[in-house]
Image (cartoon, rainbow, N blue to C red; front, side, top):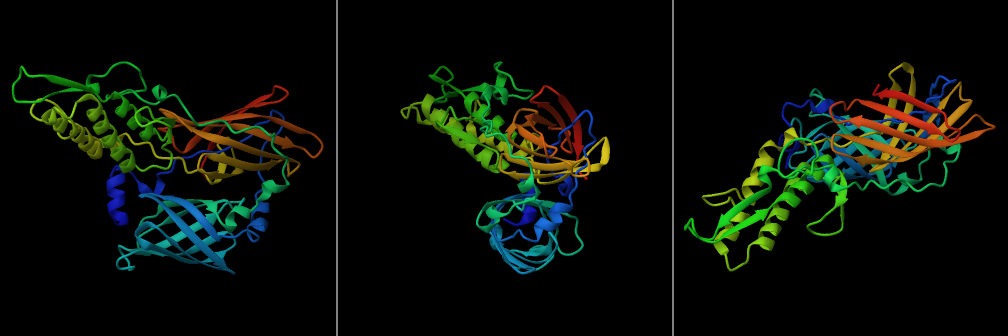
Length: 406
């Protein structure tokens, strides 16, 4: 599949792909201090970090695994999507170069420009790509998953140590992110579309088989939210964060067909085939429901957070924070008061119905006293460029702030 096909199949065509980023950030707010991060340390540190390693990447049409090798200021690499290749040169922590893909490896359809910026901790990068050298830019971000890049360190290495507290689990109750086979917010109320009834013959008085698809619809809703939930149909726990829309839809079809097999015996082949297919003459089948979400699902799909990079305090545009993301694990480092106060944060991204939150712990130090506390960050699904923070320090002081992308 080409990039253009992926963009068309996985996203609402009315979206502006160049700016579709789900945003999150981290901040400590102190009553007596105005926070202003000093990012200079990231430039000094970036020269010691490497781009070599394996990176889990997401772009405006999907996701792919990328392997990079750095030699001096030169970086080359490959990625799994369409046998892709990367080549570029470094200037500080910015990689500028080109991407190419099969079959032609030529612009305007199979090649173009890239620009990636390594984060302060060297564990992730934010970037952009385009077709050729004059097209519109779209996002492309990566997080280190294996290899030399896992040894990278950033300015947080000299910051206060965080409490030895386990990260919160991202698992949420499925009823909090689903509403059965219907629209609207999460709800346990029955929906008109939860069930369908199938006949095993053309005789309207024949035996009927009623199948409930609600469990499959609930898992599909959780998938669209990117949530981590228990899979009541197949058992175990499933984390949808890294899934594409098509992967979620395909699982929806498989789950519905499994429910058909559970409710209709093999001795009723007509009813079973109608249930798995398009429903026959009297109802809607699994394939019909699947075709509907493939056609209209992009309007309800919630894009996944891409958090690595810098953030600004909406009330103080001179302040900024540096965030890193590896799947659901979110980190941040900041300093204020001319570097006299430093802090760190580590938490878990938890996907919910209409928003996502990050919950975790923080530590701050002025060189002589270290304070710890908790933080919660909230991002609304309809305000992806804005993050609200609430913090509570160990001695009871609270703070809040609003963060936006630069």
